[in-house]
Length: 151
Image (cartoon, rainbow, N blue to C red; front, side, top):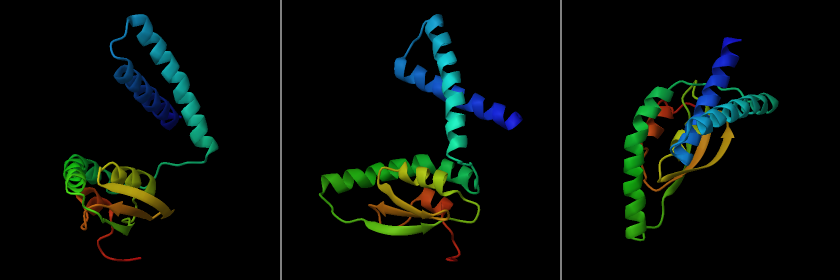
């Protein structure tokens, strides 16, 4: 019961926050409407997640990857700017085998958040395929990838 309530509150807070960001300053009535609408959206989002049978799991390495994300974004912007400015072609497509306990959903999202990395495919729960402008792994990739080379 507590997990359900937490999920609804998190969804409602996220949707209300998005409303505030996109709309800007709101009157008290508009804020009330935004909160009530977000609450309805939260219930709908939870029902959709249950209907799709999606489970959030595999959070190992998530905190480290989140902490590495700002640096990765700055580094990715630099690589993207250099590739655009100097008409550099190339990049590499590589498989990133995820460390045990890491979920492909959140790990792929964080990998794709860097401007110089694009997640092409998620063939398995423990692997993502990325196209990256830089030849070596970035900080987020290092945080979520296996280090032992195991399959």
